[in-house]
Amino acid sequence: MSDSRDELKEFQSNPNKTAARLYAECRPKFLGWGKENSKLDGHDLSDIFQNSVVIAVLNIESGRLTNLVGTLCTYLFGICKNLIQAFLRKRNRTFLPGEDLMPVANDSDPSMETQMIQTQSNETLWAKVDALGEPGRSLLILTYQENMTSQEIADVLGYAGADVVRQLRKRALDKLRK
Image (cartoon, rainbow, N blue to C red):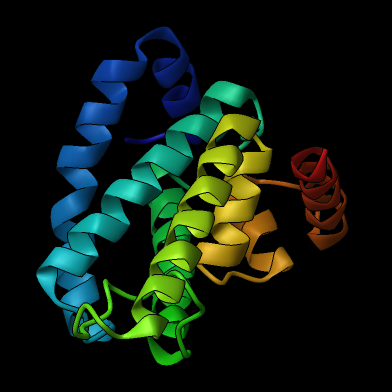
């Protein structure tokens, strides 16, 4: 991968082949770097890398990424680093209702029923978020599930800045409320 413009043109002419090549070439480099620098296990790093490839492909296909400073692999590493930071923040925070696993309690425990109703309500809410479509769905997931800041989301999704993310998130939340 020599010239970044050639990489974008190559992707636009044959996205599947270019994404597969990008995945094959960059994945071992990222996994090696990630194990050395992030102290995450290989499974988590693999998940982060796959999510990063999906984000990069969506950014290119949607036209948000039109110009590269480096290579696609470098761009992918930037997304990976942001997702690692979000992953580590999420791991260290306390869980919100509905994010924990099924509670362990006996069947006669009245709070068990309340927790199950709460879990169902959260599942219904996330189903509505999924129905929003893009970019609202991605913004809400990155904000509330991945715990990313507006600036991090702007960097990952290729928006001009945090203000744009806040405006789009507000529109998505307004749409969700209706």
